[in-house]
Length: 338
Image 1 (tube, rainbow, N blue to C red):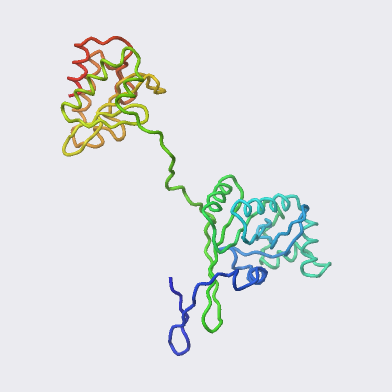
Image 2 (image 1 turned 90 degrees about the vertical axis):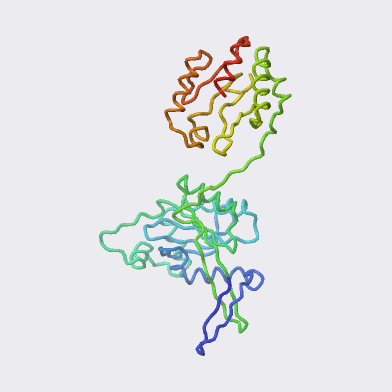
């Protein structure tokens, strides 16, 4: 993205994106945020009450603020630290701030503005222009505000998780621009705010699929005759067999689409054991992929049940291969499936 300023003469002056840290001291960003606290968080206003506040562990909070409701906000600048270090530091600060009472907050504020007589509650009321009906409870909750040139995916995801657990986290990403004549622009974008990002896709390594030989080897004494005959029937009719991590699906071509009609499982398949399951009515099955009247599929299910070989299993039907099947029964299985 290119960014231009418009001169009084109506010409464009380009601002080039620059790395903030190579051109400025980190303290300068603190200065800018401190002087522009009304613009740190979208649709909100913050009262800065301290800078480089020392914690009980000897670390330093970049900026400490209070929002309109009296909640304390820790503003942490993301320096050259890993995402884990950044979040750990911010949580450490929040745990420290949680234990601060009103007197301690007022003491920090008095030191910050150099006035030991200032009343924080009164200053807060006037700063936010609160009405007589508006009351504030100081430090009832804590907020974390992380500001950086790059909010990494790790920080985004963990911050979203913390939000879902009730911890207020805001992540702000800024971009720094400069022009050839030395002028600067500063833009911000709230990456994590009131709404969190949803995980759109999760990936994982998968187990390798079984093969025909390893599947047959995994069967008990009742399985090989039945499944070898079914697989032979599929090969003879060019019905695709798709091997998965435990078993297989038998697919047929209907209206130009290959759809699974049944699944075969070995004894080790948890929840299925050694069985043949239909794929008629469930999601991704025959009815959901092929435009056929529903009553046709329902009638097929009735035929399966009447055969005595299948019994209902939720929306589908299953045939347990837990005994010796006769040649006629195996033929009946194949005939119904065809």
